[in-house]
Image 1 (cartoon, helix red, strand yellow):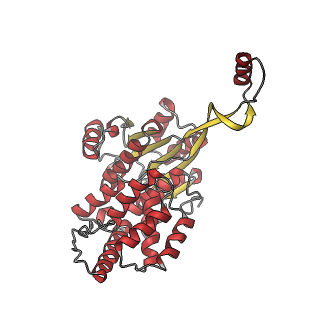
Image 2 (tube, one colour):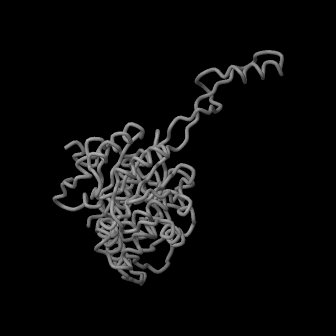
Image 3 (tube, helix red, strand yellow):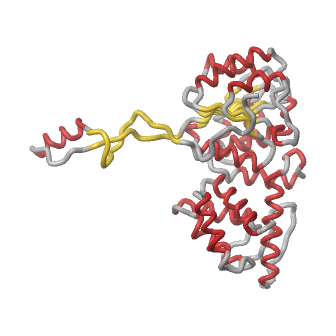
Length: 363
């Protein structure tokens, strides 16, 4: 793996964690590294920190991601350790050894990011789940009805008049604008038998979203019964959260009647103005026509409708199941959900940093 590919992958990980490591900043980093010894971990650390971070809040996220991506290498002379596949490499103070460890660790993690979670060992899956916990739940913003003070914009007549009455003259015209708030995300997770291999990873992703924006995230499990699980996912510890979720869901590894569940959801709940995510492989035991009708209704309510199908990450994927074919015309995005990289991509879509379809949605 070249140093450019390594650092572009690192910047992608940072963006998923909420750091403003956009294309322009990444190019600044690559130009800086042209003048540095890339085997010097201290130089790489500080070059990235100075070019990729935009705010004080980015610094802690940067450190966590640097530690994860480059196997614990930080500024200073701490031991170098890799965090993937149980490998370890000790820094003996030799610059060449440091460079080899850096490249090997980053390469291992890049491979791990792309692999299907069903092919991972238990320790590799635990590492992916840990990295999912670093993902930012940052959302695209939407205008709110509430106003906030502003230097320009519409005249705030009420505040201007009140100040004039207190002071006895109109010394200053006051202005206001509509504020903004994070757009709500509604996540519907299929926990049927055909999705059993991916359900835990999906729920880990859901936990990261809920923890990041607890007031702007609603999560439901779907199978043969719609079950709200947002409250259970608010637990700080992901293991505890998933145990609570497991106790709450009555239809683990059962069948899928997604059409009926969506009809029930639209009767009792709402996705109006929300980014709505359906995570399912589309194996529908009910009537696909009913599913198509309900997805059409949902698409009219939602700000954006995204379908996450783990099998889309596999070569030669075609949306041929009855459920997928019925839903396809009404989707804004059809994306993969099989790997850490796929969830990083989804997190970017929820933040509004990435738009456009994830594939041939309108077949």
